[in-house]
Structure formats: C-alpha cells, structure tokens
Length: 436
Ligand SMILES: [Zn+2]
Image 1 (tube, protein in one colour):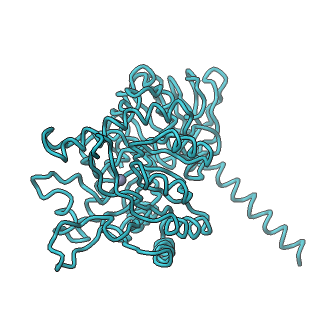
Image 2 (spheres, helix red, strand yellow; image 1 turned 135 degrees about the horizontal axis):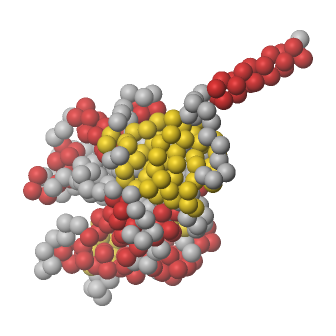
Image 3 (cartoon, helix red, strand yellow; image 1 turned 90 degrees about the vertical axis):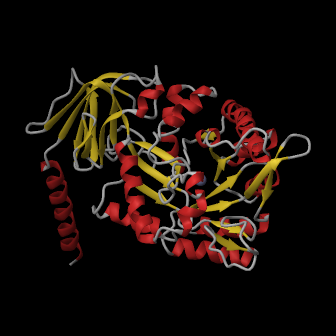
C-alpha cells in the first residue's frame, strides 16, 4: 500500500502545482524598485505575481511576460514592499483631551463600537500601504484584536496582516485607569499581576486566547527628577518579567516591553525582553546590553512631539524632557548598530494622521532614508520571524507591494502618499483610489 499512497500524494502535489501555474499572473512594471533589503534601487523591473506570491523579478529588457497576464503599469513610480508598523493600537482613537482623553475611550463606547472603529483603523493602515501591523495591546478591549485579525484573515474586512498582543500586562499601580476615588473598582486597561505566579498565569491566558506577542509595561509614570533628569516609575520585578519571558519563549513567541529608562529599562533587559518600546532614555549600558542580547528597538518618536502640556507645568516640563532625551538616545542607538524598527504608536496618534510621518522623524534624527525604509520592511520581518515572506520584494515572498510617485530616497515624506497597494496579490488601491 505504501508506494501507492506515496504515488497518490505525489500526484496531488503535481496537480496542485499545475493549478497554481495555471492561475493567471499579474505583472507589475516598476520604474524604480526598492526591495526592502538591499541598498540599491533597481530601474525598469518586471514583477510577476501569481496567486498571493511573487513568482519572479527581472529586468524589463530580459523579462518574458506570461501570456494572458494582467499588466499594472507603475513605470513612473517607485515600487516597494508593503510597509510594516511595529507599534500600533487599532483599538485606540487618539482621544482629544477636551473629549475626555484616554479614559473616555475606555469608559463610554461599547465593545461593539470599539470593534467597528478598529475596523476603520486597519482599513486606514492598509490604504496607507501598511500591509502588516504589530498591534501592541487593545487598551481595555480584551481579546478584540484576535477577532479583528480573524475577520481580516477570513476576508470579511480589508486590513493588514496583524500580529496581536491582546491585553498586555502590568502591576498594581502600573496602568490606567487611575486617579479615581479608591473606593471605586475602576477597569484597568491592562491585565494586572503581582508576583511571578500571577505573571506566568497572565501570559498563559493571553497566549491561550491567541496572543502572537506578549506586551509588558516595565515603566509607567514619568516625571522630571530633582537633577533635571527624566525619571520613570518601574513596574514588574525581574522575577515577574522572567516568568513571562520564560513562558512566552516556550510557546515560540516573543515579549515586547514598554520601557522609558532607568530601573524599569534595566529590569526589562535583565529579564530578557525581545523588543524595547519607546526607549526614551537609553544609557550606554542599556545600548551595550541591547547589542549583546540582540534586542530590537522600536523608538516611536512622533507621539512624543504631540499634545505637550503648557511649558510652565510639571507635565509640560516632563513632555519636553521626554522628547529631549529621546533625541539623544535615538542617534546613539543608531550609530551603535542597535536593530531599529519603525513604530508609531498609532491610536495614541489619531488614525486620521499619516502613519508614514515616523519616516521623517527618524531621518531628522540621523537615519538614512534607505535605512528608515528597511526599518519598516525587512528588519521587522526578521523580528516577526517572517524573513523572506514579508518586508521584501523577492521570489516566494507574499505579494504585499506598494508604490509611490517619486523618489522616497530623496524625500521620505513621499511615503505619506502611497498611490498603489497590493496585499496577498490582490490590488486594494490603484491610482490613489481604493478599489476593494
Ligand atoms: Zn503604545
């Protein structure tokens, strides 16, 4: 029976391959092509897409166009891999302070309304050429991100590939909502743990319910200290974090740590975090440890320049200090060779704003435009264990392809105006218009 069964399997594989080959191809003529990995911009390229994958990329002069294929002419555009934002919150809506700020977003809308708004957030991301998001917690919307991810995967709504982290973890005194009468049982917008046992249990619950990443808050409040330095309140102990990291790594998944600086940042690194989020105040020891441990750095520069309180208030001074130390940390980490990924904290920033604003924020602080593109393509693909599958234009990669009119190496701001978006081989936006 065995040889027969093998033959049957062989026949099935051949038939499937033949079916794949018989699917009509889509051909993209690219005037300029940035592949997300190499430093060179290639001219006049032909990309053949079949099904949801890239089949081949070759010089237009030598390429043969498969008969019967649909041709998309982007010969006046620059074609890039679909972009990746490694720090978003699809369930946050950048609530204006005068409309109740953060708390209003948690207290008033029903989960159904929040889910509908998240549906709009993911659509906004895709329209702007972001074909993958690492979404770093739902801010009180529980496991809603898993549902949105499933809705996208099953084709009910358009949206990027999502890597979700569900509820996030912090400690007592380590997350919102706060500042209410102590008699009131207020909801917390992260799962609160105290002690390594509760920490491990929370990670297990979140992984069980579909978390792709675990998000941990390692610092919370911040203020300007007596010597004018930025101080951040640490949250989890090293033991608590180690329990989470050990559990999560056992599931083959990774841990993202929100950490501004000081004690909490040190604990994040000693506890084995895979990525440092924000990292406003990185001292030399932290940078050395990140290099040694291969820790990713997702700086999220843009949000720290928004909504500053008045300069003569403690909060206003803190807001300015946060941006000021970040401006020192980022170039230091960049020149030391820390692996930097593009992240915006969208949701903290209203979804009506351009996601790509972070490119110019990084370039202003010394990153080259090509490096900033890699920070939103091949580099996060590696962080997400999707190397070669996303964040790159190459044969066998998913056909996540975007295009802009102009040269983003000369002006990264052009990336705020993505004209063409294909995800999984399907055109979502063409000539600046959404077609799906
Ligand atoms: Zn965030």
